[in-house]
Image (cartoon, rainbow, N blue to C red; front, side):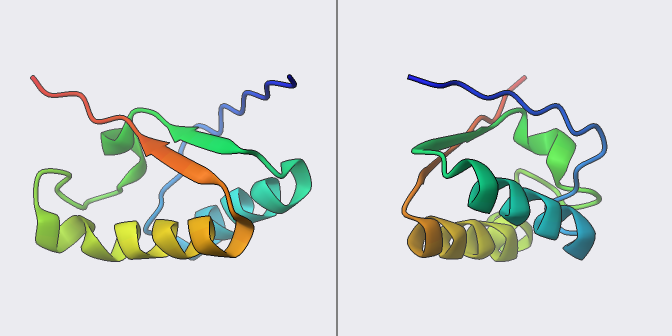
Length: 79
């Protein structure tokens, strides 16, 4: 089973350019599972502990899941 790693330092899931980069990568690789780790480093100024603030990012990720048929795993590290 192929396994791909991408370390795109500075990816921000609230930024349209970063979103396009991620979606382009999904289109190219066609993953079965996308793992985003750690979530807090990909949210820009959004508070990862606030459901209200994270909601738009989660909705966008859900749309990617539905569009490309891949599962998405988010890793959130608690202190």
